[in-house]
Length: 281
Ligand SMILES: Nc1nc2ncc(COP(=O)(O)O)nc2c(=O)[nH]1
Image (cartoon, rainbow, N blue to C red; front, side, top):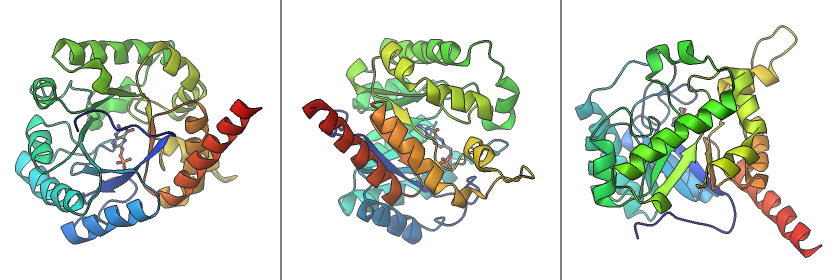
């Protein structure tokens, strides 16, 4: 099946970063065996699909070469698929996406929305797989210098529309596209919060399934910071992440992308139950 997976509720996309340096779980799943186990554990905790990435996108991260990204990602995708998981690949490289699709990945999650690698859109079009288009203003090294907006919601919508037009113009069927506001990418905490407050507008003005990826991000740390302004470490932001998952599900998000699945799986089920009760009222 090459269509976009759909559920009767907001789905939970579990994150497996096969990297030594991702911002919140760098190094924990760096060897293939632990990465595969992590993915299966996330499924057991309620994740509907697993997003496998081999290159950190955190601010300031340096690039991984293609061979290394392939080495990290492809065996983990293949084993998770063989074990029955629905898998997406988190990459900006067409060559990695291609090999991941060959290994059974059913969706390409490209944080650059096709802007980083000109070969990506043609590949995704040719393979006819679903494609996540995230709002992106450039690579990690200097992206927060680009967190300058007169109207962050309006500009993110407009720039996502441009990326969507590029994807459709390059041959990707619109029904295979997912959009994502790119929380934490060229955005400061206040801008992330403003975007989350505007999920209804994003849904209204971008008629595509919406992916919300707030998990453990810096803006949550700022919200949770103590009296001295010190944020909790990333791994202590999962309850806050689940709160965003509930809000995203209530706003009609297609999926939430999270590092810990259980709390968000419960959150989206509660949101669905409330929506169903409301429709019966
Ligand atoms: N679609 C999408 N993919 C992403 N991949 C990585 C990260 C940041 O790193 P992480 O893997 O540690 O969350 N954020 C996003 C995001 O916001 N949206």
